[in-house]
Length: 419
Image 1 (cartoon, helix red, strand yellow):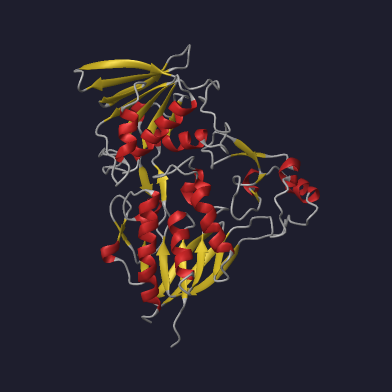
Image 2 (image 1 turned 90 degrees about the vertical axis):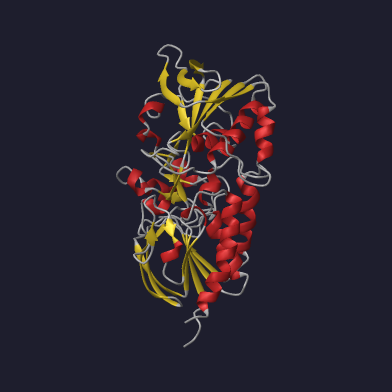
């Protein structure tokens, strides 16, 4: 029987893209399935990522160029895997693709968005911004192609987009479709989701307006974010000159996430630098249980922050977060372990270092995969030919996700030959 030379990659984030381009450059065909209307995953939402503090385009544009230059990569956006059957070297996969209502003739001219009368909350900006129902997911999105959110469209509103487009790129007759694939190996790279901070009753998220999560902070600091990179608090647009970071917001807590989410301390140290660099007269305070900076180079961020006289690191568990009804400042009640007392401090804004939840906790990709109680893939019992990468196995950062994806390429290629 002929060797199946196709690898399916489920997830178009950084680890999925890495697995895809490394596989195709070794001479094999790849199909990428991505549920979002764009490739890039969580990295695309960041302002900067470790360890060089590069903007997301620094790494993503290289991967996108490699995809463009390859004739052996096919990708589907707005797509999800419905079923996987078969065995190593011969998997039959069913994929459901949602309609985009915009075809390949799109040149990104923005005419459809300008004409569109309906609005939607931007999930890319975690609800801190609105876009038209016809929108480009973000600057430099790949594919650089608009999408129409039909769920946000008022009656007949898509006709305005259709009439405004002079390139015949709006296709109102698009329907959901089912794609059948036969592949030799499957790489699961569906990534992670931020922990739902509304579940943490005492930290004020969803009740105190100037309490945000660490991923929301990335969007605030990003040049293509809702405030064009200015770090402003949500309630009144005030410049954030006095900020607090609350570590382990849901992590290392048996009532929420019992494990350490690995990236949270580093993310808060990085975001402290965002504020201090943007506002030289600003002050920041980090409330932590333990500060963990895993990795070869990451400790230098800790020392850089520690050496800043305008930054205070306080070991202590935050007991509660409330709002000053007049100033809208955020009041933090916390136990100062080293000081030996309880303190109450006011801040312009508070950032919760929410944990990392594997996407498989919400969506199980295959019945042939076993999961831990926390939703991570248990590779010791995985079916041959199906491999998980990056944050599906444990919390890791971007660099380690990419390294893991490169290693899985070798395993996938081996599976292609064992039919």
